Amino acid sequence: MDKNRVIITVVLCLVVTVGWNYIAEYMGWLPQPVQQTAVEGTAAADSNAPAQVQQAQNTPAPTLPVFKAENGRTVTVDTPLYTAVFHSNGGVLQSFVLKNYKAENTPDSPMVDLIGKPASAFAPLGLLIDGERTWEQAAWSLKGSDLTLENGKNGMLVFVGEVAGLRVEREFSFTADNYTITEKTNIINAGENPRNVRLDYTLDTDSMTDAGNPYNKTRVAWFTDTEGLDTEDDAETLGNGISNTLPMMWAGVESNYFIAAIAPKSADLALKAKYQSGVYRIALEKDNIGIAPGNMSSATATYYFGPKISKYLAAAPNTLSAAEDYGFFTVLAVPMLKMINFFEQYVGNYGVAIILLTILIKIAFWPLSRKSYKSMEAMKKLQPMMQKIREKYADDREKQNQEVMALYKTYKVNPVGGCLPMVIQIPVFFGLYQALLNAIQLRHASFIDYLPFTNMPWLSDLSAPDPYYITPIVMGATMLLQQLLSPSTGDPTQRKMMLIMPVVFTFMFLNFPAGLVVYWLVNNVLSIFQQWLMLRKA
Image (cartoon, rainbow, N blue to C red; front, side, top):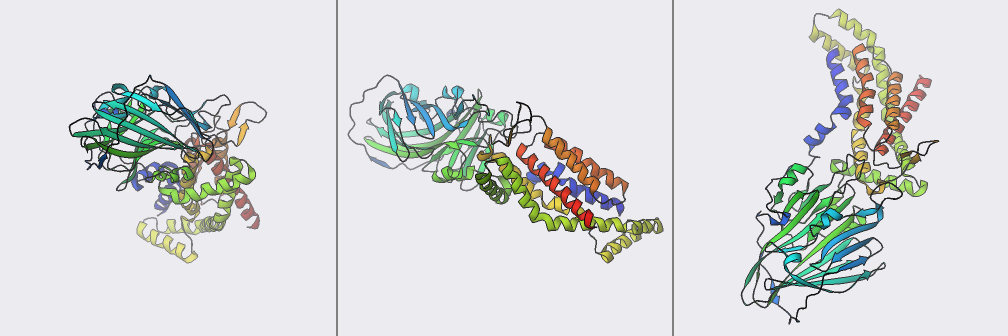
């Protein structure tokens, strides 16, 4: 019975230490692999993956003016939120710079560009028609010029091209107050024969990963109304190419904090994605668009290039708000993040806000922790009686277990009660972990800018690990002190096992976000204070 009790106690206490990956996989918090197919050719959109068939809605085409191609030029759209640069050849996007977010947490860092130079060479937002790269194969002109939009203002650019007997009109609409761009694509059959057209929307972007944050991966993400949100971040898998023929509500490339996505008005498009030459490439394909001579087929899609912030994602169509995902513990992560933001409004520091949240959580768990401490004290008092039972029934294990259980029942002691507070706080821990890891409000959020008495940057980014491992080491020391202050059960083996936990936790927390380490460190300090109070009353 003693061995069983030790094993149960240690397993419960260590589950947060070594078991969370396995729990996450079992509970389905980790994304499941999708069916993979190779993407042929040099572009993601050149795949032969099957696509959904659509019955096209044709309308008589307006009288077409004489088309005059022009030399290629760039056009800039400037809003309070971003600066986007397009090229008149096909309306491809060359850069999309966010004005409120730096690429790195340094004073001279450039702002985040959700396209990037390597990806711009692949013609992001370029249309493919029947597999042809319209930005290369078509002649183009541009209706419009540079746009500077103030808050509340709208603007439009129209790119017109001709390719293989088709007139293509791309009408881009911009709003200064959000990160969405809406495109209406008109394909006009200017020939004398019916056409059956395949249309691909494309998007290309560089890595969105922050330097120094090993938990922030760039990944392809997509959402369907049947399977919900799914992602793929494995470079080898994406290098081989993936496809999904389910109707896409949206698809894009994301990190913990940013997303570039395509959300078609009609969801009957298939996904193809590929990681190529360091660039993440996706295409949403609509096949079998029938267009009679002299008729026009229109399609609408919305692009989103921006941070994962609720109010902006909620304004986008097709449940793009699902991209703001905190995993299985969303129900806990979201309220805690709201509390952190609430405190930060008053104290002006996210590190202090996390400390205030920790105090609030500790107060909520205070009665449970007190009950746990009493349970440990009771176990300590039972040790002499348990030792006598072990000696009396040394040769009868079954009788020994029965007597020990009777002893627990008589004195109303829970043998694992001492670990229950830690086990119950596991969901809180994971919820806060997800909040700190995925909330863009905490990206580059500072607690203590510099190591005291030095000019060395320290806790200047709560979403990144402590660069000098100071907080994890101090956290481990507080755990050790907490174990030493806990009542001894009298079992040397169990005691040694419990003393190993601070070492395991210290190594585990070395690369955790600094904000999470601050939470656990402050929680330990408050627990030590609580134990000290109880020892005084004992």
